[in-house]
Amino acid sequence: MKSIKFKRAGGNDTLPLPTYETPGAAGMDLRAFLPEGPITFARGDLHLISTGFSVELPADTEMQIRPRSGMALKHGFIIPNSPGTVDEDYRGTVMVGLYYLGGEPFVINHGDRIAQAVIADVRRYPAVEVDELSESDRGTGAFGSTGMK
Image (cartoon, rainbow, N blue to C red; front, side, top):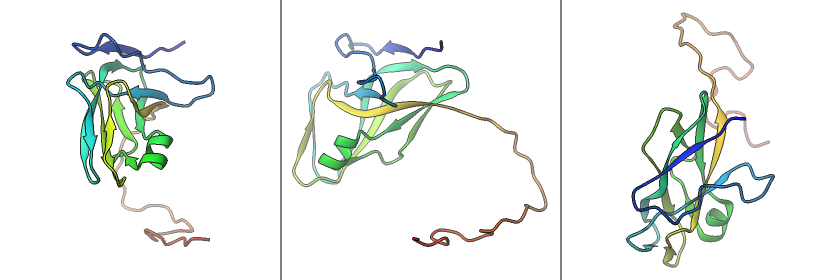
């Protein structure tokens, strides 16, 4: 069985490892590592928040950082580059960018669950330059070209 290796950042001796909260969960909850104290978000604020861990992923995988539904729908947080990607060869601290769209100030505390991490397989293909591409029903139709229905 493949495993995901987590290394604690300096000073992180209290946060639990990222975990799946239920047996059927697709994503592991990531928590805010805020040893200096909470962060208060006002509407329009963007903060990069440490998870307090670096990671070693299995070969041919990535860690996708996604919003938690409760943070997004109940409180108005989005992850601007969602899903964010942690590459298998990255060994730095995993960070989460949170952008706040809510109305009232909102406080993120040390240990709060702020995002989820989904481990996904990665396929790599060589890039090949060609003179022509095959035809398709859609053709060159761009954004919105297939309509709403």
